[in-house]
Length: 115
Length: 113
Image (spheres, rainbow over the protein chains, first blue to last red):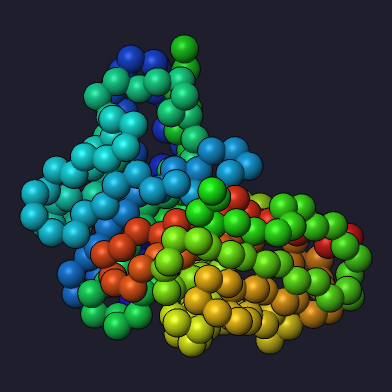
C-alpha cells in the first residue's frame, strides 16, 4: 500500500528566506504526487502535482517541488517565503498499481513564516 | 459559483442523534470523496464514489452511510453519533484518472456533546 511521510511537524522560516517542506513516499508502482495547502478553517487547496516528465514542477503562488526517484522524495520549495504562506501543507500520493483513485495524505507540516 | 459546497458548515449535536451532511459539486466530476480530519489535522479517507458507485470504503463504523443520488451529490449520514465522531468532514471531487487533483469543499465541523 502507498504511504507518505512528512518528517517535520513544523517548519519555521523568516520572510524572504527560501523554504523547504519535506515529503517522502512509498509506492509499488509509479507515484502520482501532490501538494495541498490548508489555511485556517478552510478546505485543502491544490498547489502542484508530479505525474511524469520534468522532475521540477512549478505550481501556484510561486511554489515548486522537486521529484527525486532515487530518494523517493517530493520536497516542496519556494525561493522567498511570505508571511501569507503560513499554513498547513500536505503531501499526498496515488499509486499507479492500486487500481483505485485513493489518495493517501501525509500528516501535514505547519509552515510558520515570521516577519 | 462555489465548486464544491457542503452544508451545514457547523453542526453541533448530542450523543446518540442522527445527522446528515450534504455535498454538491458543479465541476462535472464523476468521482467524489468523504474525508475526516481529526483534531491533530490528520486527514483520512472514508468513502469514494465513482458515477454513483461505491469504490472505496475504508474501515469506517457502519453508523456512517454515504449516499450518492447522482454524480454531483454525495451525502453522509451518521447514526447514533458518538463523542469520537467530532471532527471536520471534507467532501472532495475529481475527474476520473489517477493523475487528477482533487477539489475540496470548505468542510463541516461536527461537534458531538
